[in-house]
Length: 404
Ligand SMILES: *Cc1c(COP(=O)(O)O)cnc(C)c1O
Image (cartoon, rainbow, N blue to C red; front, side, top):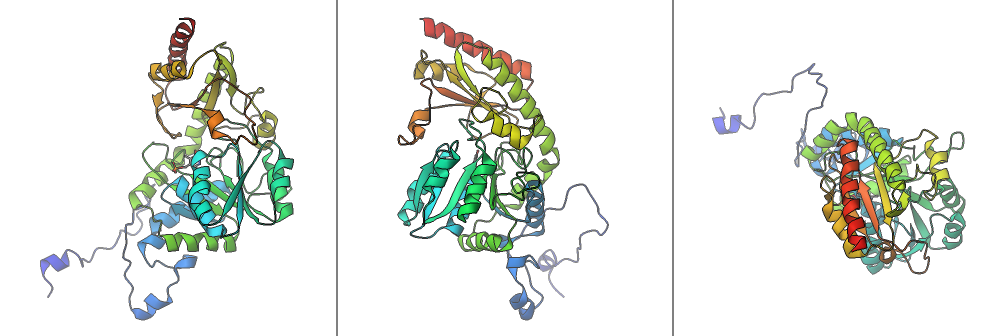
């Protein structure tokens, strides 16, 4: 006879059979219990034939991995605690001392900081290339280049590169190509099938699930999706050695948000495009950056990849006239009421961030043509007329400040 306190732990409960609810159960574990030593020794965590330890996966995380791989058209997926951790995990898996990684000049900023910090300290060099000039990438790939990052579009300045051409160059040169697919999110284009009939795709697709898959502004998570088992194993080994586990509640939140993701993405897109087109009419603004606008750099590449009626994420940037000082543009951002000051995107709340682009670019490439301050909007799920009125009132305040 065991004591009641023990019976509370070793209870006869088994989950109900035939309980086919819309959402899966949430399984939590660090420890997974084995029937005997032989089972413990025999179980292989690498191929998902069984469970060994919470860090290496639970039914909840395995399910989310399958769904994210399916979303992006891949076969395998590794989940990590943030989008940036996914970028780091991919780099750590593929690069060693003496290697070189190439980054687009408009790369997600923290990715560049990582290359400048830890990777440089580990003897891994990086160089920047102009993503709008495929020949520039081609020329910079050298004997030590092991990895090329691509992004479509750059998530602040929104230039849309000729992604298929960048990937073809990596193929020709035999260099692994990794995409930061947070903007496309698996919805705007298929990263593993970029051109119908050509069998052209990236090798790894990294996604900040923090953005659209979460959709709530309340979860941090990242994924690394592949279509090659050997590459996946490399990523997975690094993941295991580093120990980047994710929490079951976070996995549950993303699993709950995924069914509405395509609808949300489309709603963010429609609203962002309407606001971007409206901004094009304003003379305080010299350039609106959104790949679906004809005047935005790389518009034709977006159209070719995503289709004439194609999708785009709910992000756009404006460049204000150079007569407005940085302090005046800061005041414009402060004057916005519905657009909140905050990083990230993909959630219900509209967000705004001013950027000093010149300081973010390599002087050597000097690809940024504008003098005015750039402001990036992440469009949430509020009523679009309310958002437009909000930008309008802040622009009126800016205009008044510009005249004083
Ligand atoms: C947000 C973001 C990331 C990083 O995601 P976190 O979960 O915030 O670490 C990476 N790439 C892009 C393009 C992003 O927008």
